[in-house]
Length: 185
Image (cartoon, rainbow, N blue to C red; front, side, top):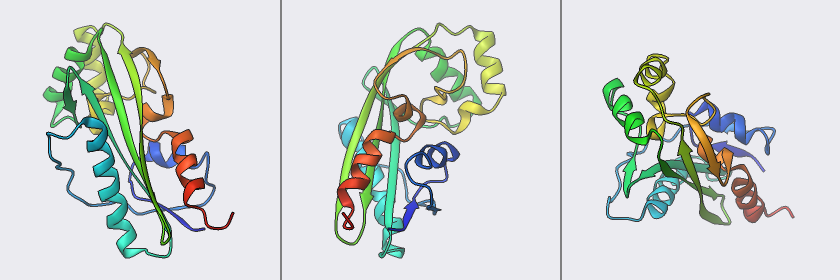
C-alpha cells in the first residue's frame, strides 16, 4: 500500500514515521472553517475527513491519512493563534488550568474510509508572564492549536491519555485505522 499524509506538520510526519516507513506528504489546502455548533469531537473529525478527501480526490489509488487537532477550554474551541498577542492571551488563560486536546483522524483508500478521534486531558503549569513572553518570542506556539506544544518544556504539568494525540497524531489510533483499511491482509 502507498500512503500519503495530508498534512505539512513536521510533528505529524515524525509521528507517522513510527508506524509507516515510507509515505508521501501532500498537505491539504482545504478551508478549516466548520460549523461551530458541532461538538468538538465531530468538528475535529469533519476537518480531518475534509483534508483526507481533498488529497484522496487527486490520489485515488493511494491510502490517505488526514487529521485535525482542536483544543477545547471551558467549552470553547481554540485554534491556532492569529498573532503573538493572541498566543499570549491563550497561554495566560490556560495557565494552571485543565483543557482537552482532540485529534480527528481519517484514513481512506479506494475500498474503505475510517474516521475516529482521540481525546486527552491536559493540565498546564502556572505560567509566569515572563515565561509566556519568552515562549511566544521563541515562535514555537504560533503554528499550534492552543498556542503550545506538549513537547516544549515547562508548559504542561500532566496529561491523561495519549501524548502523541496532543502532539497532533494519535499513533495508536492511526495505526488501528490504517490496519482497518488494509486490503492486503
